[in-house]
Length: 318
Image (cartoon, one colour):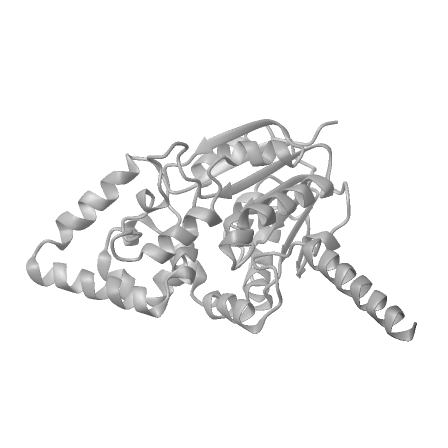
C-alpha cells in the first residue's frame, strides 16, 4: 500500500512539474536566468550603442507614433541600453518606464536620465531591472514599445514560436483597453522564397547554415497572424528602410572582425565558433582574390532595397 502511495505521489509530482515548466512566465531576452544568457548581454552593454545608433527602425516607428497624444504612460519593454529613450521622451508622456532583464544594460540606460529630463521636465522617468514581463501590472500602459526583443526570447529555436505568442499575450495584458503595442522585429517575407539570409549579406546559408536555419525559426514569418492570435486588432506591419546596425558600418565587411559590431546583431549569438571562423576565412579569401566588394554587393542585393526591421502595430480592444 505504501509503495502504491509513493508511486501516485511521484506521478503527481512529475505532472505538476511538467505543467509548471510549460507555463513558465516569459522573460525579457531569454527564458532562463542562466549565467550564459546573462553574460551575453552584459558583455554587449559597454559597446552596444556604438553600432545601435542611430536607432534602428525609427523611420517606421515614427509613423506608428504620429497620432499619439502626450500625457500618456509609455513603457519601453526590453529597453537595453536605451537606444530609443530620447525619441520616446520627446513625446512628452506623463510617465516613461523602461525595463530590461540585464542590469549592465539598465545601468547604461540610467545614465541618460539627465538628458531625458532636460527634454521633458514634467515626465516621470522610471528605469529599472525587471526579469519577467509577468511581473508588470495589468492594464497600466497606454503604449508598450518593444524593440528587437521578439526574436530573442529563448535560445531554443524550437520554442521560439510559442515564446513569441506568450510574450505578445503579456504585452496585451499590461496595456490599457484601447492601448497600442509598437513592436519591432525582423521578419521573413511570406512565401517559400523569403529567407532570413536575404536580410543580411553576411547571413550566407552556404557559409553559416546552422545560424541561418536557427534565425528562420526565431523571427516570425507571419507576424500579423501572431499578433491577432495574441488578441490584438487593427494590426499593421510597417517596413523600415533603416538598418539594425549603422548603415555606414553594415556594408564594410572588415567590421565582422569587430566583436562590438557583432554584438549589435543578435544573429551572431547563433553563429558558433566553427561557423564564425568559416565566415571570417571566407571573407579574407575573397578579399585576397579581389572579389569581396562584388560579393557583398550581390549578397546585399537580396534585400531588394528593403530595410532589416519591421514595425508591428496592434491595438488592444476597448
